[in-house]
Each structure stands twice: as structure tokens, then as C-alpha cells.
Length: 489
View 1 (cartoon, one colour):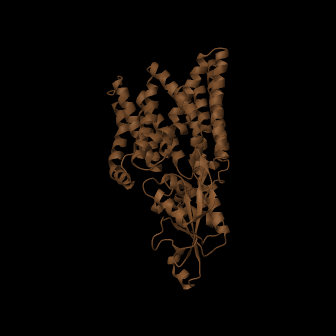
View 2 (view 1 turned 60 degrees about the horizontal axis):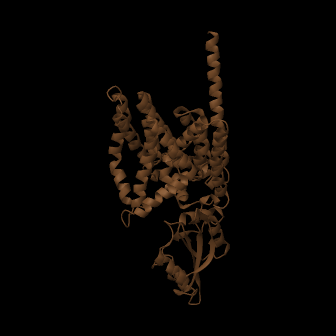
View 3 (view 1 turned 180 degrees about the vertical axis):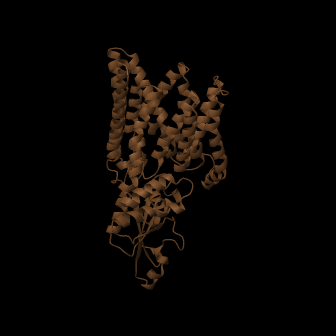
């Protein structure tokens, strides 16, 4: 081996060590945030449902991977909030390193570091990393599928095409929202074809990439149709929900990052850079499809998480170019602006851990309050009965169960005056039940239901929480009855 070859090999090893250390550093920073107070937040209704399904995989249909991973960990370490959220937090800690590696190859070392740091500090990603669900895994697998698809199309790599299909299949088996990445890759390929892409020379690569995707979509179409019809769109398409989704996503991505991403995209557009088409398809297609879905049915920003990486990559590219093109004092200003964006993200995280309390309604506090009343005969109706049951069991009351919330009460529901036990104790016996409501938009009582509560129940305790001007409070109402007559009003 010549001296030059030895030097080149040594340089490559040093570079590999540097890349590995940078990736590890980003993972450590992300982990410090994602494992902080991981078990402190109360379960939300979706998390309780995940725990239930993860412990009964035979009943899971469609996307078992996330449930299997969470269920396996819970069986080994118990069904605490920490254990149920461990896998999402671990995957969320590793994803900034994956974004860094992608940005490094797509743009530059510095652009990759900035994109990875933005993800590590993202409160949007932080929330779902501390959420007993599978969206962080969908995002990680989605990044891999999109990147391998990009390499396959741009460099005619059949192995990358097959790997992209495999990663996308795993992502879909984790959650259906990953399906939105297939049309994103297809649109990117169509854009490249219009730009003179040689499809004849690369035909086999395209067939390997899109053939299985098309067959998979056709095979899954009946199940997707059934799933879509199962969502009740009470009022048809809602332009207000459609518009509100985009506002929420701008807030979730964070406005400084979004502005940097738009500016970075504009720079690539001026250069006619094909990387913009990939990033725009990666971001735009999943978000538009999710917005349509939310317009027809109640949904949330969780399905948009898969589209977060391209925004961070574009923001990282802009910051890298801004620093590179600046000189002397201007470069100092560029670094200061980047620091301001990172500090802004850090402040959002600080708010998440303090005032917003992990963005979780305080179900544990509400359950503990009702149980502390020491009324074993009282009945409880809750907007999220599974969460109440879980909290009661964790607090040492495994026999205390909540009933599904029905407002106003109907015969045979949770009205204690209808129980034979109450009637057998005579007319002077009082029966008590608690009604626990949640103020989050898709679970809050309707106006008619709220009127019934105001007329027939007493608001006994409020557990307030505000998340970005939205009311996430949990309210505990009490109703005392004698032979079916309310005594509270």
C-alpha cells in the first residue's frame, strides 16, 4: 500500500469517526429531552387504547409492528406510563441522527447537523416521542424509504429501490399514514420524467420501486375503503377544519423553521435543483392528503408528523448557505440568527415541560380526586373510561371502573337512581355519580350536553390545562339523586 493510500484510508476512518460522534451527540441530546419526565404525564385516551391492544395482539388488525414492540416491552417491564412510552422515546431519540445523515448526503455536513439539531429540539416530535403510539417509528422508516427511493431514481440503484419498498412496507405495517409516501415518490418520479429523466435506461429500477407499491395499494384498497367509511363525517367536508389543520401544522413545525424552509426551497427553485422536487413531494403530498382527511373527519396533526423531515432539511440547507455566503460580520449575524431559531425551539420545549405539562389532560389527578372522596358506592362516567380505569388500578383501586359517558343520561346508562341496589335501600338513600369530561375539541361535551350538566350537575373540581390557547382541562361534575330526582339543583 502506498503512502498516499494509507493517508486516504486514515482520513476516511477519521471522517467516519467524526460522523459517528456527531450522530451519537444528536441522539444523546434528543434522548435527554425525550426521556425527561417520560412517566410523569398522565395517559391520554389513545395511549390507553394502545396499551390495551398491545397486550392483546390477536385482536390487532392492519398494522401490528408498533403494537408488538410496545407490547413486548410492557410485558417485560410492566404497564407503567414509562414502559409504554419507552419504544417511541427510543426511536425518537435515534431519528435526529438519521436526519443528520440524510442532510449530510443531500446537502452538506453542516446542513445535516442543523437539520438534526432542529429535530432534536422540535416540540412537535418531542410530544410524539413521549406518546405511547407508533408515529415516531413511522417517521423514521418513512425517512429511510424516501431517501432510498430518491437514490434509486437519481442514481438508477435497484438495490435502493428494493430497500425503499421494504422500508415503506414496514412503515405501513406500523401505521397506515405511511401510505401517503407512495404517491409522494410517484409524483417526484413524474416531475423528473418531465425534466428529461431517462426512463428507458432506468425502467427496471422504476419497476422494482413502483411495481410492489401499486400491487400493495390495490390489495389494500378494500381495507382502506372500509377504514375511510368507518370515520363519521357528520357534516361532510369542513373548510374550517381543512384551514385549521394548516394553521396547526405551521405552529407544530414552528414558524421560524417554516420560514427558513420556504426560503431554502426558494433558493433551490432558483437553481432549478432537482432536490427541491423530492423535498416538496415529501412534504406536500402527505400534508395535503392529511388535510383532506381532516376536512372530512375529526383527526389531528399526528398524521402530518411523517412530513416534518423535509422542512428541517430545507431549513438546514438555508442556514448552511446563509453562513457560507456571508462574510465577516454578516457571517456572525447568520450564526446569531441560527442560534435564535434553536433557542426559540428550546423555549418551546421548556414550555412543554412546565406550563403545558406534556400536553396531557390531567386524568390521573382527576381520578385521584374522585377516589379520594372515599365513596365506594359512587358510580363514575368518564369521557375516557379506559384512562380512568388505568389510573384507578395504578393508584391501588383495581375494582373501580368508569362507564362510558352519555350526556344527558339515558335509561340503563350510568344514572344511579336506576340501580336496583339504590332502590332497595329506601327513598331516603342517596346515590352519587361523578361525570368526568374532557375539554379537548373532539371529546368535549356538545352545547346541549353542557346545558344539561349546568342544570343537573355541580362542577366540583377543575384540572385546568392550556396548550397553545386550546383548553385541555378535565372537569369533574357531581350528581346526587334520590329515587331519580337530582338533589344538586
